[in-house]
Each structure stands twice: as C-alpha cells, then as structure tokens.
Image (cartoon, rainbow, N blue to C red; front, side):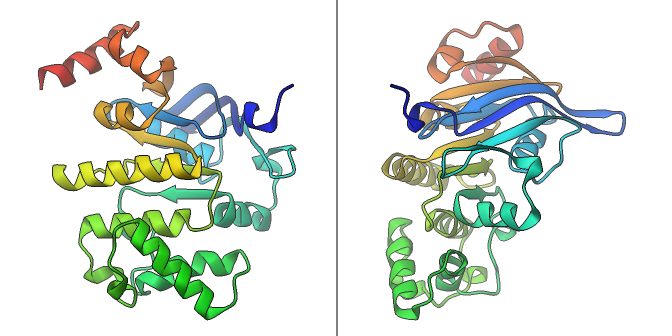
Length: 261
C-alpha cells in the first residue's frame, strides 16, 4: 500500500527560466519526498539559485511546472494558485532560509516578534502562548531567553541566522528552501549552525531543498544531490554515491577541487 509519505511532496517537470537570451535553468525535472533533503550544487552561475527561485514560486518559470502535495493530499499546480493561497502556503507549509538573514527577518522587530509573527499568521492570538512558544524556539536555536526583546540588529551573523531558522520552523512546515544558509559565516560558526540544522531537520521530519556550493555541507545534510552546470542538471543520485563515485567529468572536477583544497 502506497502511503502519502511515499508520494512526492514537490514535483518539478521540465522547468526552464530565461532572462532574455541568458539561460537561468533549462529543462529541469525532479521530485522531493517528505522528510528528504535534496542538495542542489554547482559553481556560481550554474543555475542553482534560479532553480530554487522557480521551485519556491519567487520566480515564474519560462516553461514547465511545479506541483505541490497539499495537506488534503491533492497535487496542486503552483502556478494555478491564487496570490492569497500562495502567501498562506509560504507562511504555513513552507519556510525559506536565506543566505543573508537580514532578508529573511524583520530587522526592526524583536527576536520574539520575529518568531511570533509567523505564529500569528497561522491563527495564534494569545500573547502569553505566543511568547512562551517563541522562548521555546529561541532555546532550540541556542539563543538565550533574555534576548527575546532584543532586535536582530544587536545580534551577530550566526545568531541572526539561527533566529531566521526559528522564525521559519516555528509553524512546523513540511518543506523548507535554504539558499547557502552557512555562506559568509566563520568556519566555527558554520559547524555549529550545520549541527543545529541537521538536528532540527531530523527532529521535525522536514523536506528540504538546499542550494550550496559547499560539497561538505551537501554531504552532511542531504540524502540526494543534484549537480548543475550551465543551467542544466548533469548528474543526480544518492549524495554519498555522487561524491564518492561521480560519473560526469564536471562532477569529478568539483569533487577533486575540494580534495585538493
């Protein structure tokens, strides 16, 4: 018997995105299952961020479509959703962790307010309950409770990124998009953040699509990997298999450049 957990949560079919004569991504098809972490890797300009933008509906595809399994089990073509339905999806079922946390946070709103806003978007109204849940999530992402009324401008880069994660995960979404979530952070801060992300993803059973140029990040976090070059997917498979025995010369070059570094 096939359960809903065995069925894809997100399906992309023949996705292309052009910027005039320039190709962002071309003819990409993939599926993401519940609880699965899919890494999209490649050099700068390979099309991975464009693909993430199209998958998350931030960019309209030039061709192809993206379908998502709603909570009632139906597969919905995301292009057919109304603006209000798409916004609700982003506030409830989806999260988006951006490389620059300032783009994913309300910088003039307190840490607790950043987390609480997302709860209010799904119907929470009792101030005490919202604050208590915000405190719980600050603890989950290793931010001291006495910082709940501080705004993110007073936080370090690593703290801002952890707060952005709390803001996105507090509604327990089923799918989270991550765009270079450890980019620009010191190595020691990166390691701590990766451990935190890995633990929360496993605890909550999240499906994740993560874009990264860092193959070590992909190996640590993902189950499957998509390798992109010039806007196309050139290799895909189980992460360890792709990294330990890459088929394509480009993937071999990526892996060997990391080993040589």
